[in-house]
Length: 172
Image (cartoon, rainbow, N blue to C red; front, side, top):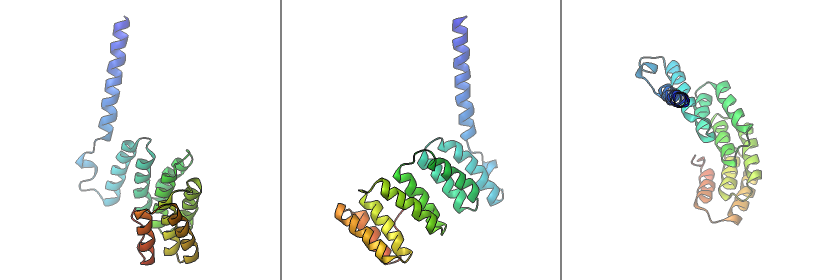
């Protein structure tokens, strides 16, 4: 009897894995010949499953929702990530999306929080400075560059600062 229940439990476990894997499979019928909005929604539904609980992965899915015109869906994912002790890198990823969407004030709050949480991140300081410069606040930008360059001679910090003077956003 005990062997039968173990076998049954194993079978249920394996079939559960198969069902989960099938749910993540993408069929051409989900996107071929569909309206772009419908195709994107179908693929994003699968991507949400594929992302699991990973913050970077979920932010990537939310980015497409947000920048693709489905802001409430994207914001809901961002808010969930932000409500579960995000890393500074998560804050930067979400802030970059807000900045790409032209929402500098919203991005700035997260970027400043990330720098407060990790004040020794020379790249983060320079990236925030670059965004300040691109937003027209040269004094704040240069103060952040000064802090960044005191910490390390870091190529990516230097490149972010140089690019900002030429109107080029940091590489994301």
